[in-house]
Amino acid sequence: MTALYIMVSFAAGGFFVLFSPWTKGAIAFWPMMSALTALLAAVSLVLDRKRLDRIYRFDRHAVVLGLLSAAFLYAVFFVGHFLSTRILPFAAGQIGSIYGVKGSTNPMLIALLLLLVIGPAEEIFWRGFVMRRLCSTYGAVYGWLFATAVYALVHLWSFNFMLIAAAAVCGAFWGLVFLFSGRMWVCIISHAVWDVVILLLLPIR
Image (cartoon, rainbow, N blue to C red; front, side):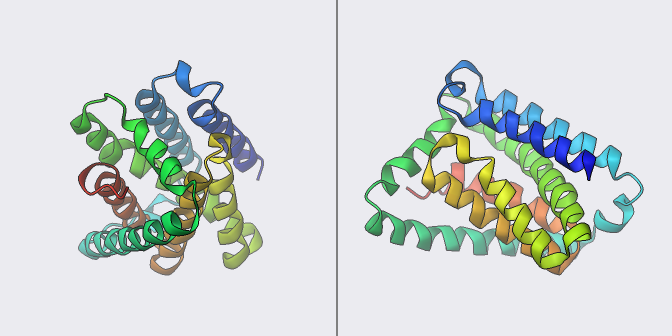
């Protein structure tokens, strides 16, 4: 578990730099997010190199399940946006600030980074490494709960309730997808596609 604690601590530090109001203005978000997640994923794959054939088995069903799960999660967020903006007076403003992360960066570049680097790398680290190890230690239910909590809490530095809540929902959802499918490719495809759709193609705001 030592490797897990070190990796999660490093991730938390990186997310602090990315999202905290004291540091985010001093860094280029997309290059750093890509570098951080790619590094976390690479180290995770090296540490888990003896288990890769079991959890990274690919077949055509993973594509279908990934796309369907991405569509379902988008629908959940669509409903969640409708309800939250009518119940919480601060919701619309906080959601708008999340979309502000796009800035003046070329949308095509953002899409490529989300599809090929950030989405896959986040799943490799958070579900394939962190959640899998927590489930091995604490069992499926508690491991899933702990992993979901950690994924939400590393976004705490943003002080944006809607972003933290979104991370919690996504972490719980992709954690369940991994538990029930047993295949990382379903989560990877779901995460990468959902990122591009909700941030660029069909934003909900």
